[in-house]
Amino acid sequence: MAGNVLADSEARGHEQVVFFNYPEVGLKAIIGIHNTVLGPGLGGCRMRLYPNEAAAIDDVLRLSEGMTYKSALAGLPLGGGKACIIADPAMMEGREALFKKFGECLNYLMGRYITAEDMGTSVSDMMVMKAVTKHVVGTDPKLGGAGDPSPWTAKGVFLSMQAAAERVFKEGRSVQGKRVAIQGVGHVGMYLLGYLTEAGADVTVSDTNELNLKEASSKYGAKVVSTEAIYDVPCDIFAPCAVGQTINAQTLPRLSCQIIAGAANNQLPDRSVYSTINDKGILYCPDFVINSGGVICVCAEVAARGQNTEWISSKVNDIYVTTSKVLDEASRRGAFTEEVAVELAKEVINAARNRVSQ
Image 1: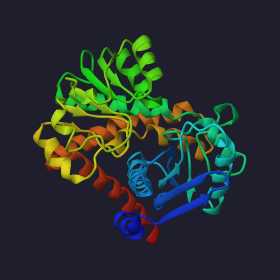
Image 2 (image 1 turned 60 degrees about the vertical axis):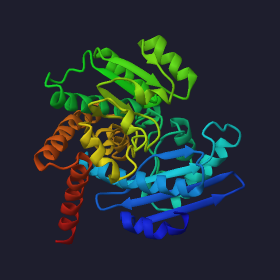
Image 3 (image 1 turned 45 degrees about the vertical axis):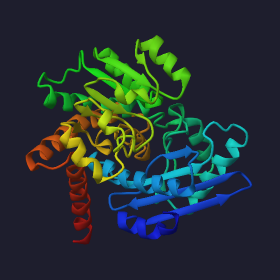
Image 4 (image 1 turned 45 degrees about the horizontal axis):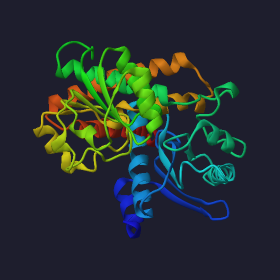
């Protein structure tokens, strides 16, 4: 993989892939800009220790492509981009210097890529970068920023669960009494747990962080299982809210759900699992359709709306409509939901490209 970066980025339609290496501050970063037809590429900065650099490159390419489709379907004036910093997300010593340097790196791209918080990064990290670059969002709402996008991401996923439940269970939008298994109760997963608990769902969770599990159990009454056992939990809805590609050939035979709807990006490894999901009678809600609440939130900051909760809420509520459209169109075409979602997103992008060329 590492030796085929240009070929793979070309195959996915990327415009630019950039590498930054500043060992004096421990910065190894990759930025992928997939498509800027609709606007600058926007996507979070992920901080993670990868097994190798090839895995990091693959993550950036997949995630940035997904951001293109996510923003297109959400009706945002943004393209797709993503960044990863290859480092321990728990690092404290030297963290400020690392993010300051990364903020300086963003300036080299002259606004083609705008970053925000993601897995392993936070509002405070964004504020460090904001001191040296204007190409960052998800900053402190007290200073005009949009703040943590996690609650809005969770809200969109919850609304999409309702859209899927409406079609599968034929009981309206309610998820009351439905058994939901959440894989990962970090920032987004915990907010999603709150929505589901309030709606009367029966929720089981797993996570690698013991503190998160204690909060999920004590605050929301969720059942707790190990990270490996979550796949075997009898449930109606399975919600991947951690790392990507957990819905794969090894885990799918173990799932007993009727719906997959979660906040994680890149939940599927590739098209090879489409037939298995269909054969099991599972309705898959494409991740880039349903988890767009976060990018909607930070888009408000790009547009200088700050924390305009009325605008954000309206756009996030539209995720229910968009999800419903994708699910219904997939049913009408007899096609897999993710395929249809990508096609619909590309229609939006092509229409914008044609308007510009006319």
